Length: 252
Image (cartoon, rainbow, N blue to C red; front, side, top):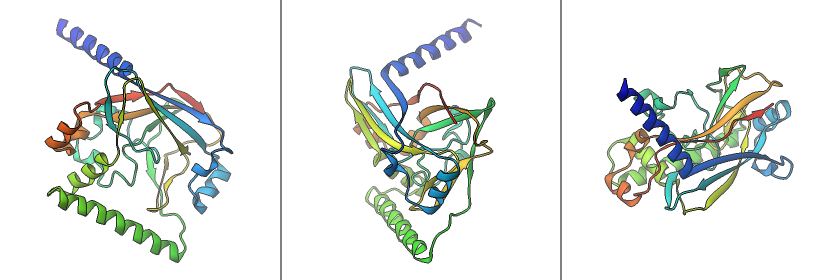
């Protein structure tokens, strides 16, 4: 019993320390002023008419006296498949093969509506003209070429390892002591789209015109770093491991 209490106390201290090290703040900014963050695609435009999205400013602050390095995708956000953080990257079925396509290293908006967690759902391909399908194929070809070149240059044998190693290292950021980084994204839980690759996601059974609560999280547990080499880890000695959470926000 005493051991359990000690472990619980240490976990609480660890959480406090992480929050003191680095903090995450999310705020909504003027939609009309920053509308250019909305993806330029017919499907997105149609959804914005039905359920208007939001432009969010993300601020990540290093509150410590040493630099902190972490991988962060600032292009978009990642729709979570579960609210159980310890399950991320812990089993093969919890590791997607193309993390860059789904912005797996982006912030995770954890949504509850009527006290129910809302998980991800993958939609059918959006509408494309014939020439857009050709453009999409070229973009995918360039993407695969970059990953394969990375795999060869680093002498990586496993494709999944190569996918993540390339994605993680190309999204590494370092925040100096008592400094911060800011970036903006378009957030619409009724339709998230990386239109250049043709995928569309949304939050399953999220009711429109009703309020919902969102807590934004950056999820970087130790299991993610299995895709780094020992050389990579030596290069980034101040690599952040943990979960960074924002305050809960209410949207409609």
